[in-house]
Length: 265
Image 1 (tube, rainbow, N blue to C red):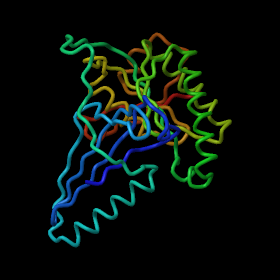
Image 2: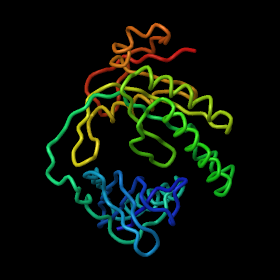
Image 3: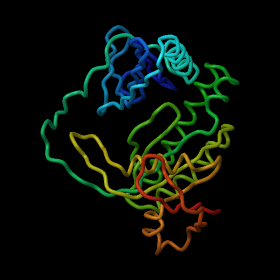
Image 4: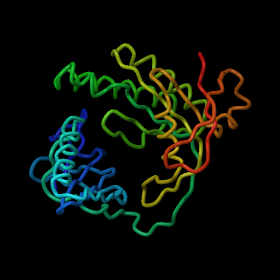
């Protein structure tokens, strides 16, 4: 089964980061796909990759073996064109947590999702060496603003960052500060914010709220910061932050429709 690991500023000689992996397998006229978030530990020959949660799976029936072969070739080519490297060896199940069977804990937070617009085209234009340098400055800027706003980085995936804040105003302030900082690097970002509950299990954060935040970010255009109605409700007392109604949207894979708001100014 061909496997691919997404790489960004993290290269093969770095240990202890999160990313995304894809597995593609063909059996006759059927394609089996598996993908999800992973943790990478160790380097070189001792590098080990773990699923951070149960991966998503999809089966595609192509009717003929030739169609399945063509589909697999195209899928592999897409992975290579989106900064994935071939991955040898198995992807292990989730690492045992020191917390073991620790009791589940729930928490409420404002979730921020940052994503670079047009990163693939920019990477191709700049080349690997220059792009890696730009991404190093990008992550440094993001983490500087997160620290200033008391945000907590949860995970990075390629060119995306997911973080949490105790207060929605802090998340919005951080988002606009990141926008200004990365523009000096010639980058434009889109940002989504949502407020909701998530579960902490064995030190890992899981929950629908993260998925909703990702979908909101996907609705934003370059330079936009979009927030959910849940964030707006929590901001009632924050008169200094101006929000413009952005309409009602259906978020892929999320129940019901959601009213979104654009941060102004």
